Image (tube, rainbow, N blue to C red; front, side, top):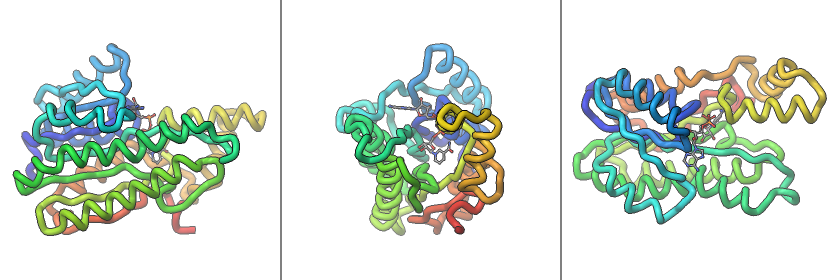
Length: 257
Ligand code: NAD
């Protein structure tokens, strides 16, 4: 596989799954453009780590990806991107009748619309070069639902639809578009849900973590950010030249039930 010297943009890569994927791609010698809502200290740490891994200076794209069409000029300024990973995402849980409308808008803007804007802006350069990989980080919640996650489940189902349309439009042109569908991964996004559950149910963090896992994920193990990084590398390999439009569960059996 020759990813050496190619450029990858990974959104939401200052933490969690995005950082795991950015590290794995940097390990293949790719130049990384990383993004997220980072403190200056986080920015420096991530830049240093990705630069060291890849041997090429990593670039921080500081942008709140909920801004919709306002993102387009900055996206065009990034230059050609060979591998685009749409990963940035947030969660909010509440029954639908109590779901704050502004939270609905935010989750949809980041978890779904941002992927439309990045693909819209960056696809033409992939087509010019005759090669590209688009990887959308969806979720088991792109395939099945859970209560109290109206916005998240709607956005992730939408992201799988977007993945399929882009795959069909690009078929045979050297650009593939696939989605990863992780189950539980122990990142800050999930840690917040474990803490909320512990408070709500008056149980320890350990019990809350155990219950959260076993309720959905038959394996009883979290998927790791390193495993998802390896999936991203695999999707960029020649073995996946003819893999497009797929939704790949990495979920310990969650969606097999
Ligand atoms: P995380 O909270 O650890 O990381 C989220 C990243 O997105 C951070 O870099 C953060 O700075 C960035 N971000 C947040 N708001 C942003 C904004 N407005 N603009 C730009 N960047 C922003 O979360 P994570 O668990 O690593 O989740 C990453 C993706 O994986 C999300 O799309 C999430 O839905 C998906 N996912 C996570 C799990 C899980 O169990 N953790 C499971 C399935 C899918």
